[in-house]
Image (cartoon, one colour):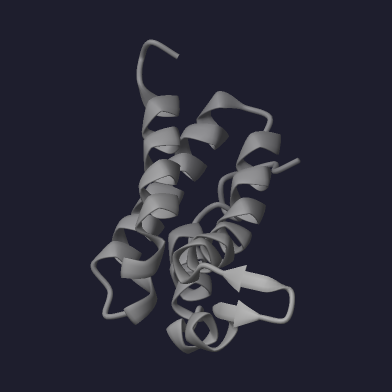
Length: 113
């Protein structure tokens, strides 16, 4: 996998950028009653956020060394926390996904793991 931490640097900014590309208007346009049933706006927003975050989590899980995993987790935490304080309208719609991901990452860094 990664031979050094260079590819890890900047991960926070990449995650933040990807999350900021999510548009709350997409939720509004695609939620509600459809010919296939009802699409809950909150569920849709959480799903959209999860689709952005999951590839980063997959990469994190595939890292070989504990140091790489720790550094990458810290970058992901930074990116998620930056998103929480951003001006994105989407952040309030995906609170659960963001919080659950932060909890997962922070637990991975605890000494008991």
